[in-house]
Amino acid sequence: MVNNLENNNSLDSVSDLENSKNKVEMMRYRPNSLSYMLGFLAILCSVMGAFVALNSMAVNKPLVLVKILLNIAILLVGFLCCEKSKAYSMQGSIALIVLGAICALRIFWVPLNLMRGVQTGAVVTPSEYAIAWLPNSGVFRGVFATVFMAAAAALFIVSGVIGYMRSKKLSTYMDSIKEKL
Image 1 (cartoon, rainbow, N blue to C red):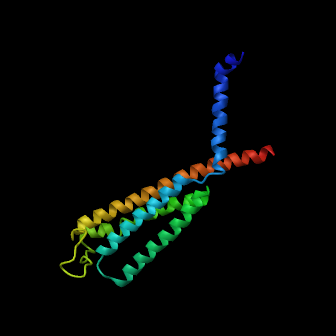
Image 2 (cartoon, helix red, strand yellow):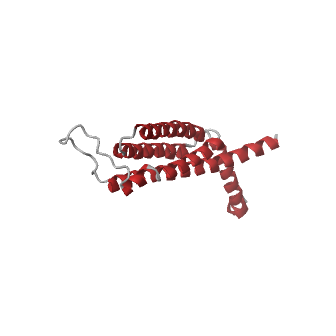
Image 3 (tube, rainbow, N blue to C red):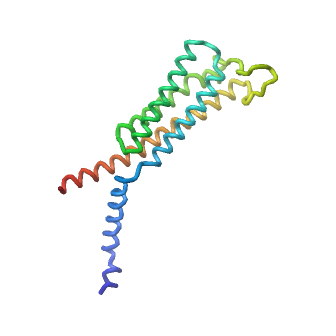
């Protein structure tokens, strides 16, 4: 009789349902580490893109100041949103998606101008004998910065979408528990 019950397909579907509930139940106790790590990788890509862009811009003090302040804001808000996303916050996940859109728009500012030759500045090196880590070509630097900023935008958006889907699933589960009580 036990073998008949074990071989019954309806029990397999029930165990799948219970397994699904157990996974959602475990979300209550485990952080959203995937969204968190993708967000931090996006911050790292954003920093690398900003370094390349700032190193390549023509010296224009107000413009450089705005660029630096924008990067600081993205770093601080990105860190805060990663922490919120780790705790399954919908608002933090939505803010990560917005940061991804801002990073995508940043591509059209400095990197695009570098590729067009509008903002090319001299490579920041102390002397002509110093090692230049990147070629002096504005096109190369613009493409390099674009790749990093596009990666940051994609990672922020993916991190936000994953965080939003997981927080929605956990919220629905928590609401179903409250209804049972």
